[in-house]
Length: 220
Image 1 (cartoon, helix red, strand yellow):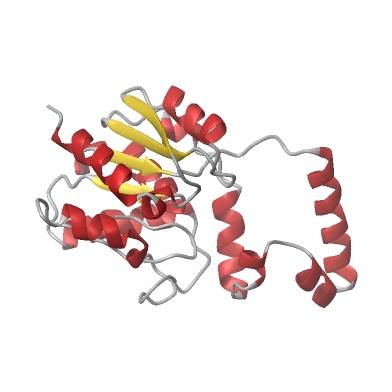
Image 2: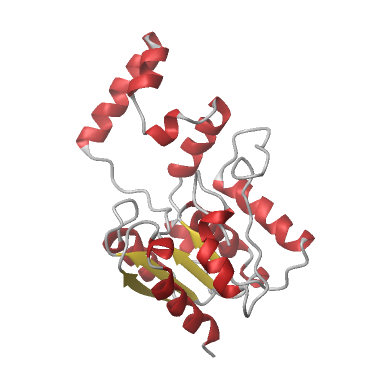
């Protein structure tokens, strides 16, 4: 189980309890999140994918299925595009990794931020960026920028693993009619399911979510 950015393995509380009845469940804390120590430098999605590959091998996991949320989906997509044989099936919920065209408003805001950062760095850090970004350490801010600015469409095309995409109908972070549909088109052996809930639909409506993924994992 691969959690989202700023989250930790406990976000999958309901899935851990449910799936552990029939499966060996391994839920990780990515470096810099949960109980894991932060990496020395600013990691990219590729760095996290390399870490995950090593974790799978060291832990003795043989072709594990992957359940990945948001940022965790970025890591899974990067890894499986290069080493699909390492894992079994892939479940993505609220998956991120699509860089959308920048709006004129966004471009103007970035320009204002760069000017402010040059002459008034403290003001820029305080008044620009999301709350999630503002609360990061300097190293993790650099990592965050690497992560969110990498478009994974070309990597998604290379994934042969059987894939289930589950998105919340009210997800405004990674909308089903944007990220969900794009990934569904890019990943050849995939299907998209929308359920009630937002970006954390898997914990908002765990019974429905768990039933869907259980059926997927049991399909021949």
